[in-house]
Amino acid sequence: MEEKGVLITYENLYEILRREKVRAELQKLSDTFFQDVLEYLNNKKAILESQEKKDNIFASSEVEKTRIQIKNIKKIIKDLYEKRETKIIQQAILSSRNNSGYDLSSMLPEEQALFNKLLENLNSFRSEILENLLKCTLPKVKKPKDLKRGSEKEVIKKPNVKVLADMPEFVGPDLNTYGPFKKNDEVLLPEDVASHLVGNKQAEVIK
Image 1 (cartoon, helix red, strand yellow):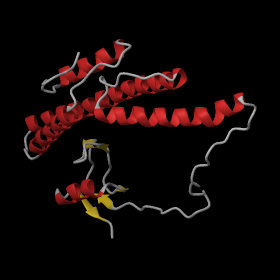
Image 2 (cartoon, helix red, strand yellow; image 1 turned 180 degrees about the vertical axis):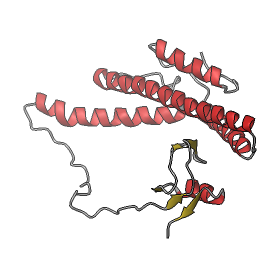
Image 3 (cartoon, rainbow, N blue to C red; image 1 turned 90 degrees about the vertical axis):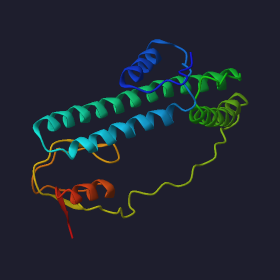
Image 4 (tube, one colour; image 1 turned 135 degrees about the vertical axis):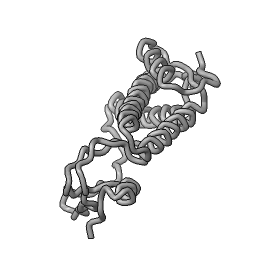
C-alpha cells in the first residue's frame, strides 16, 4: 500500500521500517518519500539549532533529546534503505537468472535506477562468463579501469581545528554525529562543521 500524502513523523517512519522488515515484497512509498524525509530532518535540525541558542537548564535537556532523536531517525533511514536495497538486489538477481521482467512500480525513481544498473551488470557478466563457459570458451570480461596503486602518494589531511573546551557528542549542520572531544583536541572536520564551531567560539582554526 502506498504511503500517499503522509506527513513524516518519527512514529510513521518507524512503522514504515517495521513493515519493510516483516513483508517479503517491497512496499510502495510515495515518489516524494526521500524529499519528505529530508524536509523532516531539516525541520529537526532547525529545532536543534534553535534549542542550542537558548541558555538554560531546560534547554540543555531538550537539546540532548533532539540530538538523540536525530541520531535515531538517521538509523531508521539507514536500516530502511538497506532493507529495501537487499530486496532490490535479490530481485535483480532473479530477473537476470530467469530472463524475466519485473514490476518496478513499488520502487522509488532512484531505486529503479539502481535496479536497472544492477540488472544491466548482472546480464553483462552472465553473458561474458557463464554463457562462454557453457560454450567451452574462456570468459571474455572487459577489464575495469586501473585503480590507483597503493604506491602512489596519498594526500595526508591534517587536523583543521583545535577544540577550546570539552564538548559532548553533537549533530553537525550536515546532520552527521561528531565528538565527544576534549579541550585542546586537534581534529579534522568538514568545513561547514569547523566553521560552525569556530563561529560559536568552541574551536579555533589551526594555522
